[in-house]
Amino acid sequence: MGNKIVETQIDDVKDFLGQTVSKFELFLNTTTLGGLETEKPGSEEYNKKVLSTIRKLTVFCEEALDACIVVAKAQPFAKAAAEKTLYRVYTHCIEEFFAPKNDVWYEDSRSAYTGKNAIKFRENVPVSIEELLLSLEGDFQRMREELEYYETNYRTKMLHSK
Image 1 (cartoon, one colour):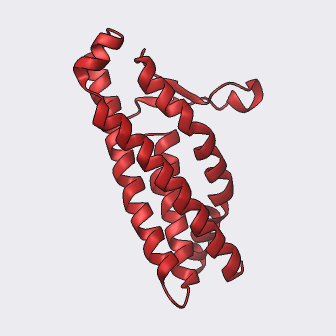
Image 2: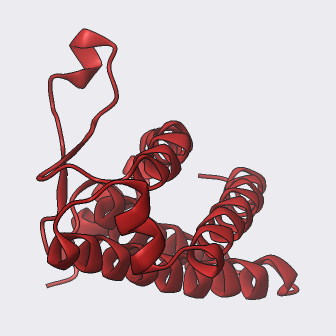
C-alpha cells in the first residue's frame, strides 16, 4: 500500500479514536454504580464488569490515539510504523470491542443478516450502557472493515519472517 493511503488511514483512525475516547470519557465521568442501579436494578457485579471493560477499552483507545498522533506527526512518514499501529488498533481496540476478554458481551454473528445490532449483553444492562455501545458499534464496524487488511497482512509477514 502506498504511503498516502496509509497516511490517510492513520488520520481516519485518529479521528475515530478521538471521538470514541470522548464518548467513553463522557460516559465514565458521569456514571456511577449507584446511578446505574437507579436506572435499572440488576446485578451490581455484572455492571462492575461492564464498567471495567469500558474503562479498559477507553485506555486501549487512548493509547492507540496517542500512537496515531505520533505516527502522523513523524517526518518523514514512517509507513512501517503506521502499519504496525493500525494492526495494534485492530487487535487491541476493535477486537476487544466486539469480543471483550471478560466476556460481558459478545457479537451476534447473525446480525449482518438480520440488520440488528451486533452487540449482545449476557445480562440485562441499564439503557445508558446499551445506548453507549450501540452508538459506537457502527463506527467500530466500519473501522474493522477498513483495518482487517493490516491484521491479515501483519500475520502473514510474521509467518514469512520465521
